[in-house]
Length: 162
Length: 439
Image (cartoon, rainbow over all chains, first blue to last red; front, side):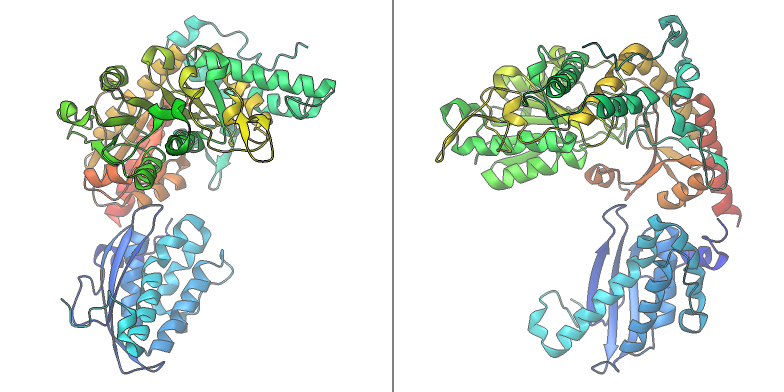
């Protein structure tokens, strides 16, 4: 159990970083895990355009188990300040690790503290928990990128808050 | 042909089980309970409400049937077809009698309880363009379908869909803070507009057993049909649909010691005879012409295609096994374990029962919340101790929303569950509290 619930995971779950929805933001998404009812609302703010756009802020309001809370918390630490493409590379690496059934221990140079989630790969039921926030981020980035080129394609988009 | 697929439980007497020691006599009938999980820990299987484990006689009945008797049922000009049909229809007759049907034809085999409930909802939808004989099943704008806030999604979503397709309105009984059905609005909820009352016989989360007979009477006085979700009651208590007076009832095989892939719909014969079919095709017809067809009498009318013959035979063996145990003894056993679990869990500081605090009108499902620990994490720690429970909303999302929670942890007991296993559950919950609190 200590492998799954590493101290750093419990720390993040008790006090998730960048919790509470903030403005301004370029995209807001809502992800639900239909099997357990866990949910996350995430806001992402980008500056600049294209692949080199910088993720300037991520904030979230999450309801979920310690794995999903901690994973979303660590995601914000890891991805704020990265370029859009760098952030997506980290995401790909994280997803590969937790879905690897243990074959991929995770690259600490890419994932930093998030390698603590390698233990999740041994528990197929928990993979979705670990990925909830990451899938929300992926969604948000897609949404922000699509509104960047054509704001009319996304009616939910509310760049200046209300 | 006299192949007995139901000889089980030899040497047990009613006296043994009446002393509340059901599990001691039958534990060995369930081989899977011998295995270990998570690095050698004995399995404590407390997820029978999701699916029950199967006794050897059920496993054997299936294998014997397939090994020696299997063929297509109801047709085929050969001995195997006759034998197969006899096994299949024999299982139907035993199951029908087990749940209080007036005749075997009132029992339709389906792919499961969800399929059975959808059968009723879709057939009622088909009544809109069927002949005048189906008039009483028609629903449309102005009509109401009444459910409860504690329904499993399987007895909620099909009715939402029927309303969407026909323009009928969905209404529901709420729940009280004591985890019971709120009947204070009964007079304004059951009216002449009510066409269907669809409700559970036992909540799969709270364990709550609503007053089905009384509600059925009220619904019938208003001219409504009553559809019962009996998935959680049939495996745990004596159930008599005829005496309850309900019009339709659905239940599943795999929750009553039988196999997956099979469930049943009980329906009053006069209703089944005029309800339009849902799935159409082979086996359910009377006569077929190129441009139209006429339909067979029940149960064939609702059993299009090749039925789950192998599963039916195994389910018949499960019925024999439960009958041998005696459903009164099964109910008493469930109540004993539920009482122990309620007592043990509520004694832990920070643990709250999501359900009635006593065993009155309550089945063997005990859901709970642990302060400061998400149910998924509780479940993970329990699993690590070998205790298998379910976490999440248990397909009853509106119920969880009603009580302001996203999820819960649920322990459910079967005929083979033991008081020691309840102790293991309570210890493991305390262990989870230590793990997340102390570190």
